[in-house]
Image (tube, rainbow, N blue to C red; front, side, top):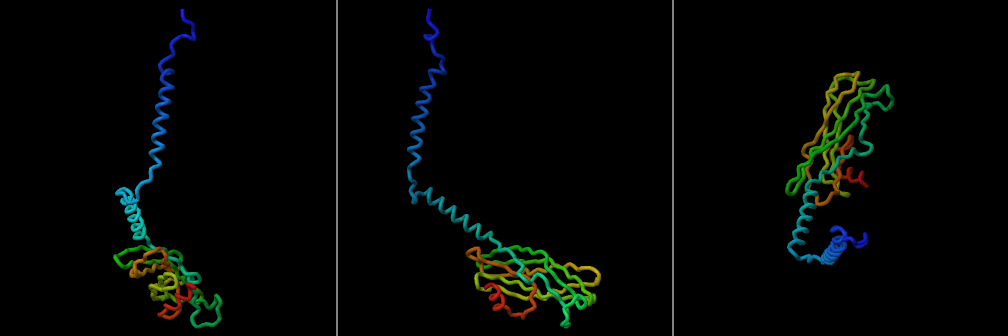
Length: 205
């Protein structure tokens, strides 16, 4: 009669060392094949490079510059011809609350629709009627002004006891299509002269 130590081992115990050896050999083969350097001139490498180039171009085409309310131009206070800048002489105060934009890139140019939401708050000297506020849109690339236009926005304000909301937009902000994402769009109230290429350039310094 055989002893307990002489009993035949179960199949899975006999197979385990063999399977481990086969797995180790296979793993070794995989690790050596992974060290092969791919030829940069191979069709696969060139196709990968071309795909990465297309991604960069598509990201640039999708680039739509953000709109920033220029510092110091979000509020416009009107005292008329009075030199006494007190609440008793305030005609109205205009302010810009929000801004937005959309982009339509072309082959060589980009056209943007830039918009803001604002309000007119009547003052002690306010008379119901039409209020005209000056709003400038400027496109700047570095120190270069690509676009600058001063708009006269008319707002019908007939209630002297409550604020009047208004929306302004310039749908024709057009400039050369950018080759890099270094375009800034500025908007705000501007009581300066019509021509402000130099003015906008100075403000970016």
